[in-house]
Length: 400
RNA sequence: GAGGCCAUGGUGAAGCGGUUAUCACAGCGCUCUGUGGCAGCGCGGUCACGGGUUCAAUUCCCGUUGGCCUCC
Image (tube, rainbow, N blue to C red; front, side, top):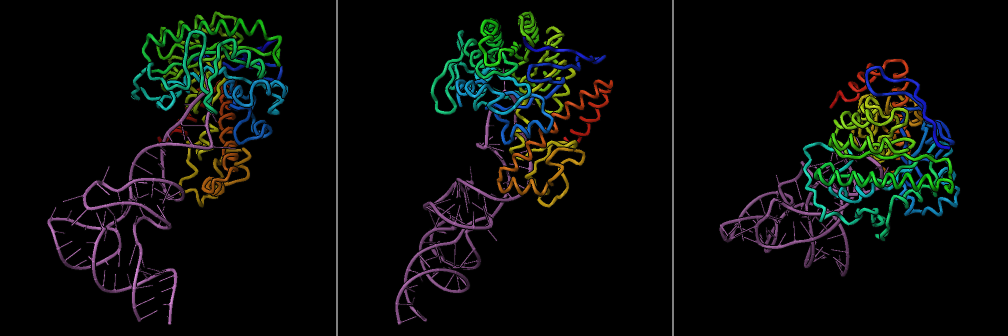
């Protein structure tokens, strides 16, 4: 038995929809922001804190947990939920993205989002040697000790079954948007073969999983090319997955174009997850393009570096003007941090490099983004999505 | 009182007869999108003051001021 997805309401003009994903560990009301806890911990936060700020689900990473503490330990601990004391729904990413982030993207200023003008020469021969792709899978070097490890689709799924998240992802390859068309096509076709292998292995072995109720999502690739994206959506969409992930490295406008092409083809009655996105504007865009769930490291990563979301845009708490600003971070915010502390206190914590700064900033940013998506959900149910989007984004980006 | 050592961004240090004067930390900003408790980028100096030698002085010489050490 896997997840159940129900659509409660659809946008009249647009692809967006409101729904819910039911798993054996609880319900995710969609659209929803999934909080990232790569190594089985949302950095700087306890699971109780993650829960109390309104989080519905957490996403961990197969590659990182495989390296540390190892899938065997996670399984012995009773699986991811028990290990990290998180009783709600969980996801694991397959580790496929690391072929990209540790490969071409490593030290090459290519990320999930970039401007079209960024120039990078794609040089397969000079790939940084943390990851190497072949037909069977990927050879990674451990970021911890440099040792080599091979992931195949089957191996990735086996590890994910030992970790035991409710929703797991097929093993895929994310390409650089600067890679030549022929390479993107080749990688996409390989990803399709890997998707089928991931799916077959999962269906055959899920009974042995630490969480036998886990579902599997296939991942659509295809870069920024319309024909490849549509082909990928068609092929992956026909496979018997429980839902879909949309992967890739994007330009800003792709959130509307590429994601839209894909969602017009994917079967409507299954949930879609946009991997690794995003910032407020991208979330609005993704929802409008028919995405149900998102995960992103951004809220917690920028929080640890002093970046805080407010309704009036992102601020840097390290700016001098906050040293003696005793008002709360966001006047309209009801999070734990805003309920008890001021700009000045967070400014002090960050300048003094006190770890509580990371905790309070992470609580605030996650509350902000998780609840923003909840507000979007309400606006959709009330038929006010367009109004809400316009007023939020105008205010949020008015200073840029 | 005598002798010695020293003076370089906010701090602590490098440097050398010709450098865009280097580094670390602090400071003022910026960047971060399937994690990166990182990292990177930009901005900030009349090289204590006065004089001399030299084509050229932060660098060598003299003096002044200030600091540290030893001796009486």
